[in-house]
Structures are given as structure tokens and as C-alpha cells.
Length: 614
Image 1 (cartoon, helix red, strand yellow):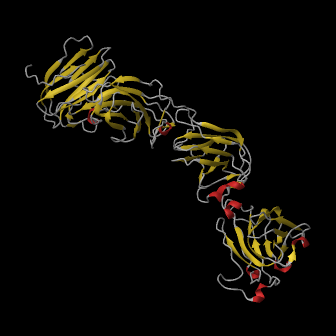
Image 2: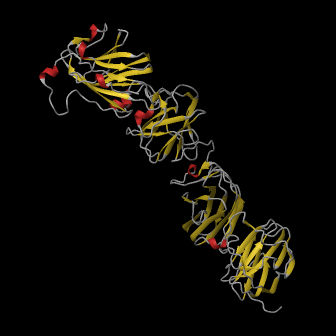
Image 3: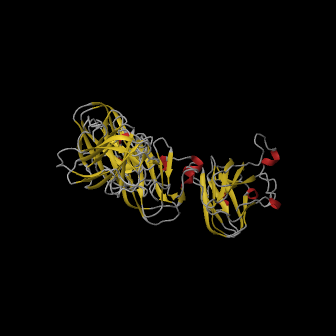
């Protein structure tokens, strides 16, 4: 803690002091601003007992500081205190006194002012030291293992001149950046070299530095007190990245087993800092890269040496922490599918989510694209033989999905939530060719199944189900014997079966059982059981009825498929590549009144005609 000693705080012709928190030093001169001191006060009068007390810091992470404004004429040679010290200082009795009341590990005095050439520091043991100022008028003197006692400062300037300078007492010397701003031309030689930016979405990340030591000696807060954390070494940039014209968005990032921080100064002098972008690794991204040099500083969240880091750059606004390289020509993970414009909502693929952890923006989308995927290859390539005025590509899963689609002309579309948490894109004037579809999840590493659909025109969400489907509830007795019929159906079935029966009236709701479930059914037993054999490309169960009918079909794995209005008011459930086994069919009516119906099974096109003869 730094505090004033009230018994000793008296007016002085030489100095006055103000106690301030870190980052907010304000100087205070001996006279009131805007007034002229009396002539007597301008002489080098002896100090009238004023001293500034400095105690122990209460908060080691936010050390206090004292800022003092010193002014007045000089009269004595600085060499009278320390041989070889230059300039003249104020009278001996006009020195600025600091009383240290508690032992301190560190204490530094920093002085800055136009025309300042030297600073003399007297310590309680009667010794003196001299710090010469640089051409900007900056001088500092740092002490370690500081004993209690009085420390006195005298500031020097040219003979016959007058001092007007600021003195700051603090735990560490005040950075010149805080006093004069960031000056690139005053930096030392770049520690880890200069690098031209060459990264692209296709080539992946660019390695700038490997195995460099982490330097964390001074606070980075001087670059931006609200956004810059940790410690670095600001005497030189760790690396300089030169960006050419038209480079677009890019990122700079570092990795280490230590908790790193980073600051990047762009060609305009603006500073951007980051602490944790990926775990404890920092990254700084730029939306539109200004051509020129970017000064990169890498440090540690805590002070002191130790460990090494690797530094990278990548194209795009999302740093490519992963080692994966995007290959837009890679074979799709699931396969290539031809688009059938006449199929309504065509089920393109059913597959497992990749569970990838690379950001979607690692793809050269060119705009913000949320979520994560495996960017090494597309999931599906959809081939379009003829152009379409509108083409919709969309997917459903029980996970929160995202999607990116690359059209044949190289343009990209990206979507997160087109229908609930399901993604979809609709492309106008879709040209013939291959459409690469990348599917991912909003959070990295999510698992699950998805169904991918395509349709001419707008997305037909009502005719879709999530990948993995919905599991039948315990209230649905799908293993019971059917009330109407049980039949076998497969690729060799010569005639598609059609059964005429009466839908039972019911007050048991199917609403809410799963996606697309509606109406009222009889849950104690299915109406029909279809035993399917190997080799069916798809299974279509449909119904035409006098009432507004509904269907619930439970497969051999317990997954439930529902539909209300597939063809006008007639329901239909289409299951692609069905698993061989038992499919229990529950027929219902939207109002619960029941009625005469025809239930059909096919692997081709349903016959939406009502049969009335039993």
C-alpha cells in the first residue's frame, strides 16, 4: 500500500504529491493550475518537511503507484552527487523525498520530462546513484530488497534550465509505451524473424516459429489496460508478419504447454490482445488484413521464464489450431448421390455425424459460419444433372447441426438453424454439377445420426425425420400380434399388398410421441405387421381413408416413424434401406373417430386410391 503521512504532508515550494491506483497516474504541481506562483516560491527553498510515504502493496496483482509533478530551476551540478553524472539539478534541499515504511522486494523510480538529462537517487545508507535520461527525457532507477528509510530524488537538466518533469514511484519501472505510446521504430531486432504471409485455405496453417522460449518479464497492460493481460518482453517483437495487398481475413495464434498470452500491433499502430482462444492458447484474428507489418508479441499469463511456444498464421477469421489441411477435392465420406427432381423430399443420405472438432470457418466459406466438423472431406457430394430454379439441401438430427455447401461455381452457402436446430440452404438458379455438402454440429465433437435431404424448390421439412428417428414409448405395444394382418414383404414380392379394414375409434393421442406423430391410435396392438426381407431399397407404408388418417410405424430397432399428410390428407411413411425385420403399423385418425381405410405397402410409388371391397 502507498499512502501519505499526514503529519508530514505540508506545502512545499518544490513538489506536491498524489496517491493513485495503477494505470491512472495524474501529476500535480506545487501551484494551482492556471495560477502563477509568487516569486519567493520560485527560489530553491529548503523542503518544509514534506515526504511521501510508500508502504507495502495490498494487492500484488494491482500494485499501487505514486505520481509526482516536479518543477523549478536547477542550480547545482549533478556530478556533485555522483561523479560523471550530467546536467544540473535543483538545490539539495529541494529533492523529492519518499519514506519507505515497509520492506519491499522491488521499488523503481521513473522520471520523464522534456529536457531531462539525469536523475540522482539518494538512499538511506547515504549513497547516491545516477540514471542518465535518453533522448526522449526518460530516466529510471530500480532497486531490489528495499529497506525502510528515506529515498530522495533530484532531477537534472541543462545548466541554467528549469525542471518540469513527472516522477513515478512503482514496483517496476514504468514502460516507455505508457508514457510515449508504442513506437515501432524504437524496437530492437526481431527475436524470431520476419515472415511473409503465405497461408491459404488450401495449404492450411503457416508455421512462423517453432520452439521459441517464452519471455514474460513486463506487463502487457501498457498496450491496453482493459484487454491485454499477462507478461511479455516489449523491447522487441517476437515475430513480424508481413501481409501483402488483398490478403483478406487472417489469424495469428500460438500453442504451448504453458498458459500463453498474445499482443499484435497492426500497421496502423492499433493493438489487439488475447489470452485463451483455444484452451490456454491465444489467437488474434483480423477481418480484413491491412497490408504491412504486424508486430507479434507472445508471453505468459504469469510472470517469469519457462517453456517454449510455436507460432502460426492461417487464412480466414478462425485460427486453424488443428493440423488438418482442407482438401476440397477429397472423396466424400458417405458417397456421391444423383439428385432426383421428381422425388419430392429425396433422402440423400443417412449417416453418423463426423464428430469433428475443426471450425467450419476452416473451410474457405468467406463469411461467418458457426459450428465444427471434419474438414478433411465433404460428407456427401450431390450431383445435379439439370439446372433447377430452386434447389434445397437440408438435414435433420437430434443434435444441433450446421451445414456448409459448395456449389459447382465455387461459391459457398452456410446455415445453422433453418428449421428448429436443423440446417438447410436454398440455392437460386442452381447450375448442373457437383454440390459438396459438409455437415457438422454447433458444439465440437457431438455424436448422433443425421438424415440429409434434397428437393426441387423450397425445403419440405414436413416430409423429413431426424437421423436415428424417435424411439417408441413404452405405452406403444408394438410387439403384440396385429389386429388385422401380418405379411412378408421383400424385393421378390410380386404384388404390392393392399388391405381394406376399419380404423378403430380411439381417444389415445399420438400427438407428442415423436416428430410428425398426430391423431389418435389404438396403442395396445398394431393393425398390421410387415416382416421385411433383405434387399429392399426402401419401404413405403401408406394409407387412404374416409377420415383424415395418420400412421405410426415402429421398426425392428424400436425407432418410430410418423406421418399425417403425405399426399393431401393421406399419410405415408417412407423408410430408405430398411433393416430387415418386423415393422409394426398403427393406423389412426386425426379426430379419433376412425373409419374405412385401405392400407398399402410398396417399394415404389403408392397407389393413392380407396378400395371398398373386402
